[in-house]
Image (tube, rainbow, N blue to C red):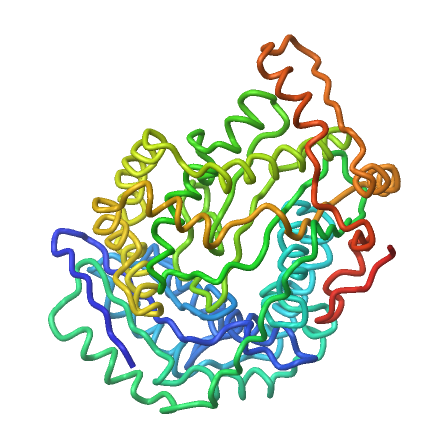
Length: 484
């Protein structure tokens, strides 16, 4: 096991993060959702002498909680507590980690919650999330990254209590464990946790290698149909770069220039929202991203062995969907062709040097980034960016763009209302012009550029446009074939 301690003696809090390199990528076929259900039940299924309700009662006067986050590659049990309550808090967390009860009634409650997250949440009401998961299903078809962390509807139903017990025993092992402590960590506390968690099994089975992602042919498009007033669009392709690679860092600068999450410095955001009012946000990413709560910051502890470049086009009016796809791909093509100017590079680099420091404002977030660094064999991302960006040149960024980004082929997932799908498919497949109109006065230079965008040729493979109803997605591990 590994232990990371980031002391902040002036902090009144202690953050604990216990990370196991075990996630939904370890789900056995036919029981997709086992890792997520195991993680949830670990924290919400009672532990030691207490039921889950009794654990909550014990935590309440501490104003603290024990949470869990399961992703493709890792499961993280975490909590932050005032230092005055550290020892009783830790005793509860220790029981959760070492003596889970996995109560049967809690298993059924959490099974229903997890299944509903797919059927009543993702497929029914979360159009943006559905588009992102559909895109992952295209990029990682046939592999464990090609389905939600929650699994599949049938897979969740097939999981038994014995499956959960066996998964914990095989996957929550010392060789996969990283203990993280931050804040006002008292002397000897790290050693105490390490000694306690030495009771975990030493080693489990080797992790199964990931299959290679599938490369797109042209612009392969999946239309996911459901009633919706606006259409969410996700575009992307496999990326053979992670934080373990030197090229990741110049590529991160290029991505920030193109589409930093929920900020107005990105090219996509300014051209699509600010200039045209197409939607409320347009962003790009060179690694997996989940927004941390209501902040604009990435959630830590989403390390992946494989990554993808993606663009998220927040929902647009159906009549503007074709235009929005064209504009996003045209902006990407421009960045691939021209790279960044020296001025754009300097501005973006300086922004990232300042902005990235905000990602580690709390002991828990600092721990998360440090643990991700350990996963990749690097320092934490913020420190890596601070060191590397100061010596980076615009030529380095543009060379990384040429090596890893492209605009001649990609996958696209569009969550669309059935009423307009056939018309959209005909227009997309034939590369028909897609003019746009506005309800208010628009700058002449924007209108002039719109004429070029409306006829920008997309690399569409008309034979690879598919239509799948939303309710068919993620019933099993396989992506439905769909209608041509």
